[in-house]
Length: 209
Image (tube, rainbow, N blue to C red; front, side, top):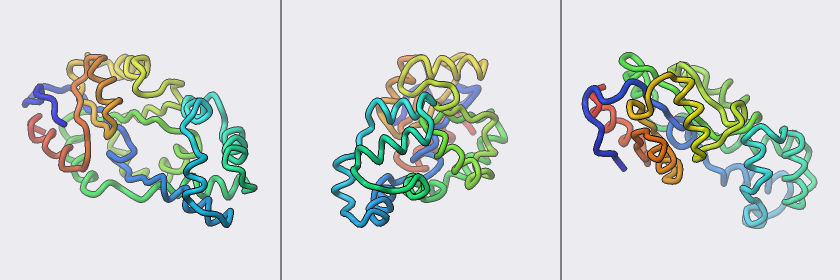
C-alpha cells in the first residue's frame, strides 16, 4: 500500500520495521518447536498463546525474559525449561527477507536509515547477533523493550522522530501491519505497507533512491 506523497526528494530519512520487512519471521515455527519439546500438538499450544498485557509488557521492557517465560509456561500448561522456551522463542527467525539486503545497501548510500521494532530482550539479543551485517545499514535501531514504547502508540513514533531530528513529514516508514501504518500516518509520517521487498523497491524508486 503506497502513499501518494512519495516522490523524488520527498524524504530525509527512512524508518523500517524489522519483522517481516527486514527479517523474515514465522511464529508457527516457535509453536512447533515448543510442541516438539513438550510432546504435544502445535494447535493445542497456539490456541493457548495470547499477545496479551504480559506479552506487550515484555515488549516494553517492563517484564524480563525469566518472568515472561514463567507466564508462558503457566499459560501453555507445559513444563519446559527456560532454555527450551528460549530455543522455541528464537525459532521464529527464518532469515533475511528475500531481496531486502541490496535495497538497504542502496538506500543507505543516499539517505539515513533507522529501524523501529516491537520486540523483547531475548529476540533483540538473538537478531543483533545473527543479523549484525544486515542491521549495520541502520544508523540506529530503536527497540520497544529499550525505549519502553510500542507501535502503533503515538508516543513511540514521537520518540523516534525526536531522536532522529527530522520532521515527521520527511520520514518514510515501512511496516507490514496496517495498524502500525495508520499509527505512523496519524503522527505525520509517510508510510508504506510492506508485503514483500518489491514494495520497498517501488518506494525507493519513487523517492529517487
